[in-house]
View (cartoon, rainbow, N blue to C red):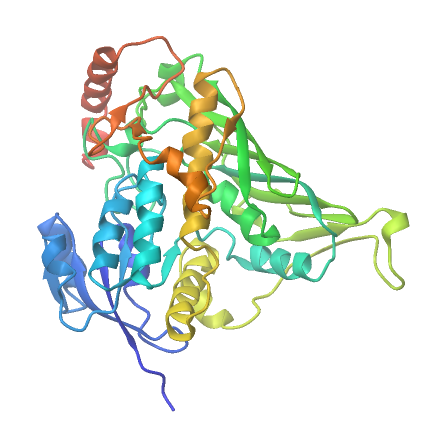
Length: 424
């Protein structure tokens, strides 16, 4: 018997295109509505889909029969819309980041708890072939309990999507121009949490200062933050330590490495978005079991649905993100990342920035699962994005500059790159 399709809507039709075409089995999500403030792009996306369109989110979430929404709007603005959707009785899939402030984290967790609906945080970088394989190996005890792990998502970019698609920066106050170097951390941190099941509890972070901004960025995407990336040490709840690195230092790389009590595994470095797609697993001689190979490198295959996954973005990870969300709705099971995972993962970047501003001082990460422990963050509304609704501004650079100076730099940088941003 054919499974009943889940009726879904997508908010934000740029990145949101990854969630529009999954009506067929095994995902079975039927697109019924789109919402975006950009009417031109909204109409363009709907040419081949012919579904209802909205420019008002409040009207969008009232769409008849809609059961779930994908939030693919701006990075720091997901939580308020997620809360509205949950209160409207909808399941929610939220793109990165889960929250813009720790205050929003408390409010989002409460909204999910009160709704009884599925909330899935849409971190997808653990769902490629190597990520799924490492999860399987770890759960089987291949490397024992995690002691140390590394996550690297270094993705230097420009003002235009590599595909020639939508603009990545549409003005001097766009979030990409304002978020600090620690903030875009979930693509590095997420797979470490997904594979091991461990939770972050504290961070020490350092921001990486670019010495010659103009030489690095001439004719390309300029961030007036004057910083190229960040290195963050993360204490996990079992006592293990993770190192998270990214996101805009020259030299693209996405990779993950795990050292456990009886072995190690890593994605092999090399050319390609996720490297060559090879996985290395190795053990010390004293940890070898009978018949086990001490050091092996191989190319994992999909556990299932390989043909479908191969057609989607992020090396097939987008397929699995959609699949896991649909399965959680149908079966009432926990998604790979629930609201607590999403808030904690995002908080690695928020708390990491607090640490970087204090020269690497250790900063606690909220335990969002604990209603009592999270209460002290209810009024923690600091944000580096100047237009963050209901937030107090915190500077987004380790340089000694004023807010007024940053505003002026933002305008100058945007003007300098205006032609590049606008495809001219």
